[in-house]
Image (cartoon, rainbow, N blue to C red):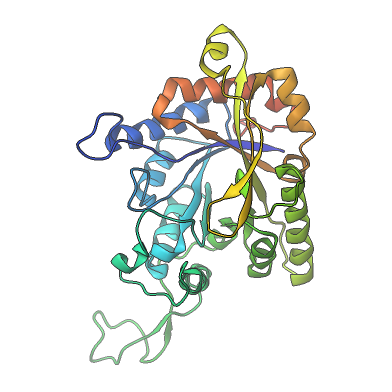
Length: 347
């Protein structure tokens, strides 16, 4: 592990109910990114869900975070491709990559179960598969192709063009184009097979606090094998650059009486359950312990050792101060022993 960042789901109260508002959740996340940037945290990532009181359309939020920071990379973990217009997303991601000077880690995936019944239909998209996997795949392929600069349309006749810019029928790519933006795309893989597909597609690997594999081994052991599958498939595909790999964990460092009071009862064990019917999933534990214990446990996690980036899920409803206690505690007492390289080390 060389880098670590925070992952926020952006939970807020639905309209008309008590609790953190959507405005507060968005503004707090920008402020959390700003403060995290100041202590060298490497990444600020947000989860995307639809028809739920969480973050939904992330581009504006990522742009605000990028403009408020200097070193930290901003990104998603992950965007549900079933709900996206792939060419619009390619334009947005390229613009964001240019504006942030390449400080982007844009995670996408098929998506997980959502509150709505095939909610992507309300966005104007149809699928054959009940879970929309075919739709997500088609959208992803068109998105990554557009982001890489492949032609997506043909120029009209000169009489129809305004302004007249191109020879008729010449191939056109979406703009703006950011040359390396496609290398900052990650696939959120939940299985061994999806990790292998991400490698063949030539994108980075993002693994979560769960994996849709269950054979009695720990989450770390399963994810370490997933990473092995990914790297083997990457080598076989013959890509000419080195990809990145991230994993996520729920970690609450206890470093004083205040963090003992806040986090002391949060420690849990790993579990096996189901998110989608018939698919057994290994869910990671919540770590709430003193620094020495965290260093030992995380240092023995083979997936953390195999990945270059660790994402810490944060309880955004608790506010910026509490989330910064988590990040500061990890940065000061745990991360250096795991090989952390602060984002602001060269400044």
